[in-house]
Image 1 (cartoon, rainbow, N blue to C red):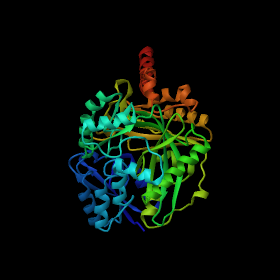
Image 2 (image 1 turned 120 degrees about the vertical axis):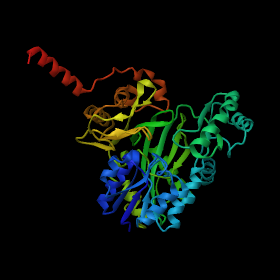
Image 3 (image 1 turned 90 degrees about the horizontal axis):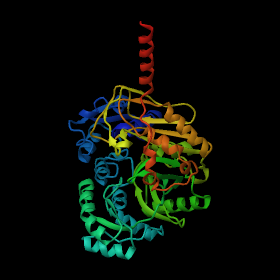
Image 4 (image 1 turned 45 degrees about the vertical axis):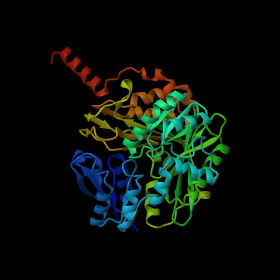
Amino acid sequence: MIKKLLIANRGEIAVRVVRACAETGIRSVALYSDADRNALHVKKADDAYHISREPLSGYLNPLKIANLAKALNCDAVHPGYGLLSENPALARLCKERGVVFVGPPAEVIAAMGDKTNARKLMREAGVPVVPGSEGALATAAEAAREANKAGYPVMLKAAAGGGGRGIRKCENEAEVRRQFPRAASEAAKAFGDGAVFVEKFVQNPRHIEVQILADGRGNIVHLFERDCSIQRRNQKLIEIAPSPQISEEERGRVCEYAVRAARAVNYINAGTVEFLLDSSREFYFMEMNTRLQVEHTVTEQITGMDIVQEQLRIAGGMELSTWQGALARRGYALEMRINAEDPKRDFLPSFGRITKYYAPGGPGVRTDGAIYTGYEMPPYYDSLCAKVTAWALTWPRAIKRAARALDDIRLSGIRTTIPYYRQILSHPDFRNGSFHTGFVADHPELLQYPDEKPREDIVAAIAAALVARSGV
């Protein structure tokens, strides 16, 4: 049993893990840099340890984190998402020190982290993959030959990639030759590995992913699917569970593929298998994320499962708390990533001091965040401020509840994606459950919303006007 947990992350996800620990009687230990000294996860954890003066170096040092976990007598390390969550070195170093890593074994992380190797494993397991090169490509000329075989357009993709980086769409051979060194360079900088492969570009697909859980005793379940098609430049914005645009037959098929994929690699703990659904209603394996996902909240809302607590249970050597036949979904949930970005200015980051913040609430609304009034959003990290998840029994009611939740928020001092999400929620294609990964690019008019003054500023202006008029 895990009694003390080191959280090797920061921000919203660190707060989420702290809360899971509080409900399961586990003592939580947070890490922080100088820039995170006043962060919410530091305030909420049972203990907190200064990891570095620099903003990122401590969070990205697997040896330092594994040694610290051992020195602090922590039973386990939870990596969250991002940072070192899919770094096999951290999992391996924890194991060497007798500390449990809350995630799959290092060899599984490594196997699925290499996209070309993952594609090979899935083909062998009978899971369909997008047509493309069998392995990483050494030169632009080799990439051009493989692209010509697959047929244009194609995607150049980083073999060690993730998060939308190291990806280039190419319409012809000339673009492949020009973009290949750029994709390789970006991949090397982002992941320390410049390997690139070619994959057929699937036109306007749906992005469907399946949440799975697996324990160390061979038990594997899926928690149904999520629809992540609302995205910008391969970065997800709004996530939905279940997908409003697939049939029950398609749902059963893609979930079976996901379980097959997990079983093929002897997966343990929580993971997500991502697929593209093309216009002919065929699913293709895209990648497997060997960690907790940002959007796990929508799955929790429709199933009633606490995925983080389940992760801790599995890591502690216990069986899954449920079995497939006992799992059911109820209603629809939407998660909106509230980012400190200005959509009207090409989503330019908007860091600074949050002068006022009230989280939304009420029936069916959940907020996961790491901000508070007076908090200074540091410019060194991800722009995520909070995640607002709305649940209701039907898809139309879930949209209405999500819109109400956005109207409930009070967040001043920085620009955010809130007004842009209001535009998306009001679009008829979104409301009808008919959208694909090109939705954002196809609707630039959604950026033409009026600039809004914070309501408290309007109230203050009215009050000042009344005072001036009365002559007080």
